[in-house]
Length: 526
Image (tube, rainbow, N blue to C red; front, side, top):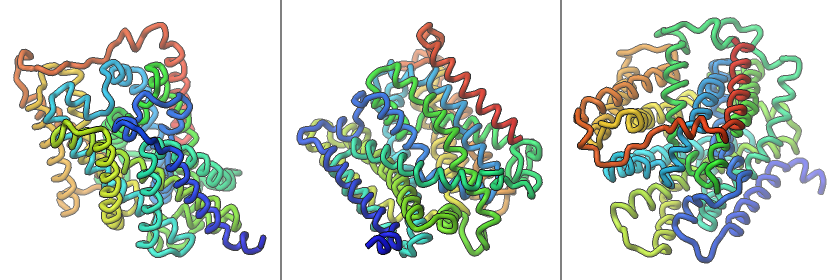
C-alpha cells in the first residue's frame, strides 16, 4: 500500500486537495445571504485573513509560473516585475489611495468611477474589466492544463475541464468567502511545495546566470536607455512597467481592491498592501530563481519545450514522488485560486455593476445571488475557450502584461485625472479611455505587422502602455470643458492630512523599510 501511494503520490495528493476545495465551498455556504456578502464580503473579514487573501490574489501560481517562464527567457530582468513593478505602487496605495477609497464608502473600483464621473463611465469600466477577467481566467486554465500535462501527462482539454469543474463547484456553493479561504490554503501549499526547490537551486548561487553576460545577469548595468533591439530598456521598465502598469494595477485592479475592501477597519485596509509588500519580496525569489536554473537544466527550453513548462519540468527533474505530488498540488492549487479570483471578479462586476445598475435595479437579494451563480458558470465556460489564446504567446507573462497594457493603462490615466484635474468630466473620461485603448491596439498591430521594431514582446508591451496612458491623459484633458462648473460628480482627492497624520507613523516606518529593501536588492543585482 505504501509503495502504491509513493508511486502515485501526485494523483492522491491532488485528489485530496480537490476534495478539500469543495468542502471549503460547502462550509462557506450561507442559507440567508445578501448579494454583497456573497460576491464582495465588504468590511466583513478579520485583518490576518485579508492580508493572506490579498497576497494570494496576486502572488499565486499563475504569477509564479509566468515569472519563472520570464526568468528562463529574459534572465534576472524578471525581478523588475517585483521590485520596480510592485513595491513603490503598493506603498503609494497604502499611504494615499486607500484612505480615499475608504472615505468614499465604495465597495468596488467601478463605484469610484461612478462617484467621480457618473454611471456611464462606471458601466464602461465594468464591461472592460469584466472582459479582462474572462481573458485572465482563460490564462489560469491554460496554465493549469500545462502543469497537469507536463507532470501527469494529462491532455490539455482534460486538464482544462477537470480543474475548471472543481473551481466552479466550490464557488457555486460558497461565493467570495470560499474563494478567499481557498486562496489562503493555496498559498500555504505553494510555499510548502516550492520553497524547497528554491533553496535547492539557490544554495551556493548555483541558480545565478554567472556564465551569461549582459542583461540576463544584470538588472541595470547592461540595460540601454531606449532601444529597438534590446529585450528591455530603461524607459520601458521605469515608465511603462514601474509607473503605468504597476500603479494602474495596484491602485485600480478589481480583485486586489475587492480583497482590501473586506478589511473591517480603515487602518487595517491601509496596512494590508504594505505587509503584503514584504511577502512580495519573498515571492520574488520563488518566482525567479527556479526559472534561472531551468535554462541550463532543461534541454530544448524555448524551442521544443515552452517556457511556461519550465517550473513543472524542473520539479519533475528534482523532486521525488511525494514532493513532486506536493509541488504539483501546490501549482494546481495556486492556479485554481487565481481562476476563482477572476471568476468571482467577473461575477461581481456583472451582477453588481452591470446587471443591477443598468438592467434590473429592483430585484430581490436572492435573485442577484442566483444571477451571480449564473455568472460563475458563464465565466468558467468562456474562460475555458479563452485558454487557447495563450498558446499564441511566448510565455504567460507576455499575455498578461499585454492585456493590462491595452485595457488597464487608459483606466489608470482616467483614474489619475479624476484625482488631480477637477475639470475633467465624463465626456473627457470616455474619450480618453477609447482613444487610449485604440492607440494600444494600433501599437500592437503595428508591431505584429513589422512596422515597429522591439527587441521583445515584453518591451513592446511596456512602451505600448506608455503610449496608451499618455494618449488617454491628453485626450481626456482636451475633450473636457475648461470651466469646472460643468462637473457634477464629487471630486475625490488625495488628502495630505490623512497621509501625514500622527497615527500613520507605523505605516510610514514599514513603508520606509520595505522600500529600502527593494532598493538594496536592485543594487545587489544591478
